[in-house]
Amino acid sequence: MTLLLTSHKTPIGTLNIIADEDIVLGINLSNITALKASLDVDDQLREMKSVKAIPKISELLNDYFDGDISAINAIKVRQPGAHFSQAAWKAMRKVSAGKVISYADLASRAGSPDAVRAAGSACAKNAIMLVVPCHRIVKTGGALGNYAYGLDKKEWLLSHEGFL
Image (cartoon, rainbow, N blue to C red; front, side):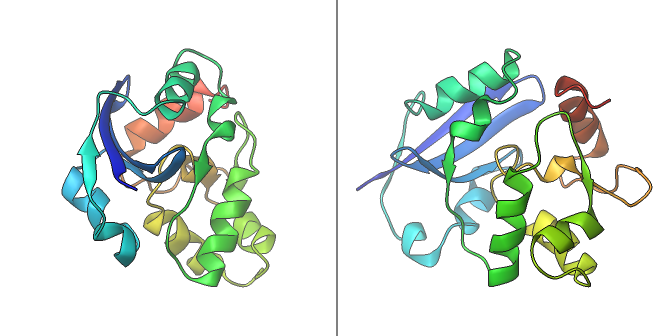
């Protein structure tokens, strides 16, 4: 089956999205080349078709940016990564919109309380921004920490979700 590729305009910039039918394989704000490079090797070899919108996924993203901040919870995801990263990404998806947890909390929820640096690394390697909400992970003490697309984007997302 052919993968679907689209660009989706949002208040924080243009999201590049690759999906396998209704499963998101990657979302970024940088560029399509980087997005393709984040895919599993088998998916990188698959044919891709550019489309105006990806059914269901584009609608749910619109709903999120229109104020239904829980809409992205219905989007299915898949990305390659080591066991701990998979556990961290799964834990991130359980952090409700409008809430944040620390990198230490993320490490604990992912099953390795001492793996705080690995939790930060899982955030940095996350290829499905927004839907796997690494923007909801902050430093112990509440400082926002880093964000691959800039702190202004992280602040906007957290404000949109009612945290800031």
